[in-house]
Image (cartoon, rainbow, N blue to C red; front, top):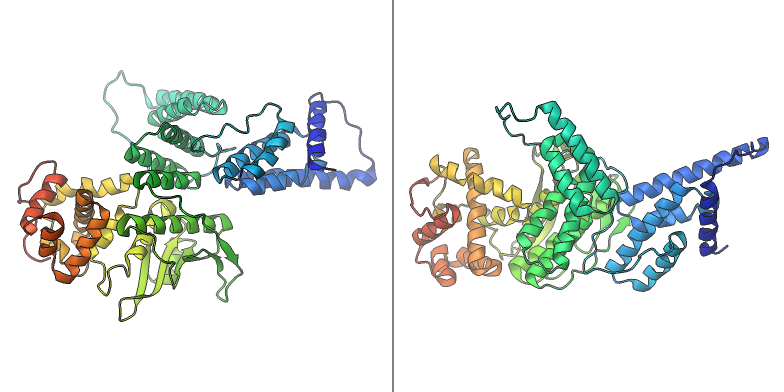
Length: 520
């Protein structure tokens, strides 16, 4: 029977099922068949739900359609199939596959006459999570208790938070995402633990808000990017967030749409690794295919964005490709690399005598909640920079400053907020010392080194643009930084750069006091 006919019969069965009647006891010889049918339907429901949570909309549609002949009008099953159709239609339209989308629009209309499968928007916000997802808990920062006796007690705040959360969930169920996002925020402020089970839906509300702003042609890209990154911190597996970051970057730069990332899966290697491969990366893993594909896409998008940002073009495909190893835990990571488990990840390279890259490798561990949103973009940026400065290695200050700038804004700001303290403690370097360092400083100065490097890179790349900055670094490596400062920025020497940078970093404080003299 054609699928359209099956859908019509399923709808008719759902109407009959709305008026339950006593069911006859099945004959004994049909008992095993009935159990098998029930199990098949339940399994399809679970697989469909899991696929939707993983945003694998095509797989959800396929598995749910596969059991249509056995559902006997199950309304829960049909509701999930409707949701899967709606999400898959949005996904197909997002990729400009309108002909295929119309196939599923017709099927959706059988299940839900009058359904609006169309009305395309400039940017689609994906689809809301179908059920609470277990996400890594974000760090909770609690304010000091207020001594005012008129302030609500902890118990009262918990009750208030639960009431607000119930209102947020109700608004979310009605597709009132702006209102739901506001209520989720209020519930979190009243009692931060209350929203733990609602993180995916709260994150979706944030992404929906960004979509609305982009559709209204907002150019507040820094604010929108921060909103997307805060959503991804709540729910790192909402892959549409990464697409939004790419869209924001594209609008900032006027760049073309990046090509679709094709991921090919290979069988286990002799060492027992599964392999997912793209044009420029090989991901060695023993994780789910979905996580391997997310890793591949984030890596490719970071490579494209960083090549364009710092060098003006995507460049040729990498040969050799970059190998990314996904270790299950920090302990596994430590055993395999001898790097402490407290490190979130690292990149390593081997160079030929002419400066050409002979091998690229990134090692990460999957129990770090920031692996996809911060650690991988950071290490992928190091990989982009390696080999792009000829025979010279990338200067440490520029390498780390440029890599940190790919992380979420709040993580960048944590470095910058520490600058005044480092200055007061006499832990900052002069910019001349910083630029001419050939290795990392002593461990006691690592924090100040990162903070100052990020601030200096951000400052110089904002003055004339990122690509002028990389030209300055290349020229500085060849002929000295002070002549390059004059050539690219018009600064006489390190002293003038010190004054300009401090005015930028400390809000107008241009005094040269507070940075350490002498070599570290």
